[in-house]
Amino acid sequence: MPGPKDLDPSTSPRALLGAELRHAREKAGLSQRELGEPLFVSASFIGQLEAGTRRMQHDIARRIDETLGTNGFFERNCRAANKSRYPDHFAEAAEAEAFATTIREYAPLLIPGLLQTEAYARAVFRAYQPTAPEAVIDDLVEARLERARLLDDPTRPMLWTVLDEAVLRREVGGEGVMAEALGHIGALARRHRVIVQVLPFAAGAHMALEGALKLMAFTDAPPLAYLQGLGTGQLEDDPATVARHELTFDLVAASALSPAESLALIESVAEDYAHEDQQS
Image 1 (cartoon, one colour):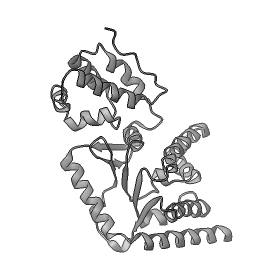
Image 2 (image 1 turned 90 degrees about the horizontal axis):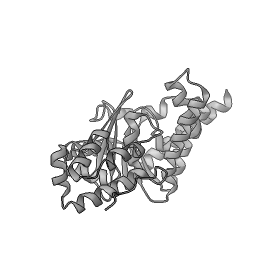
Image 3 (image 1 turned 135 degrees about the vertical axis):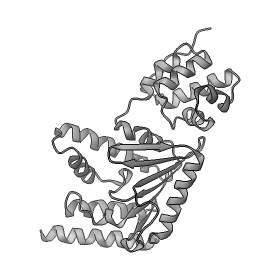
Image 4 (image 1 turned 90 degrees about the vertical axis):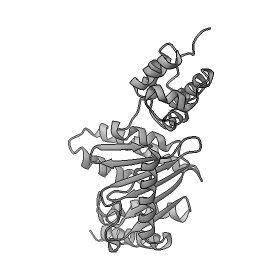
């Protein structure tokens, strides 16, 4: 019997690869836990591969082929599934967003990518790469705006963001850019497309002082937590670890202003930036 055909990378290859993995596993009569044991990964990790929320790395693909007898199918096709426009440390988390039903995020320093305007994103990337050619910056901005199109869907994913007050006060790109960026967030909140809270400076110390946090929930896969630092990122799927980070977010949100108070503050700061821009 002929084996499966190689995947077409133009048709959501990661989702297709996950579907093929589920088919091959079930054909072999293995549970997710039974397949995970010889690969030294958890059942939840196999579930995330099958749902398309995790990348299938080359060494895992090779061991899957050996375990399931799939003649190198997954090793060949994981390369197509792993092509990404995003930096390596962020690619897996960014691509998982497309499958998430709920995204909860604490942002300590910058407006999160899903909420950024083009001008704000351009200022951020130019700061990250001050000597990069303009074409490189254009590609990065385009990829970020493409991510933000997730919010074109009226209901999914549900996005709940807690912005540190520093995000509002840090002037990225100038007064006009900040006025537009905060106005955009306010408009999304007023359309009830996102839930936004602001964690004020007055809240003092809190559990997430050490960095940014993103939590993602899915219909057919266990939840994930993503922690990001300077040029680094870590995607966590261990249930106890994810649960601890969920508690962190809950406590941060509990210390933040209410959504109504947060919206009033965001729009007030946006107006201040707009006024300053007109005066300059």
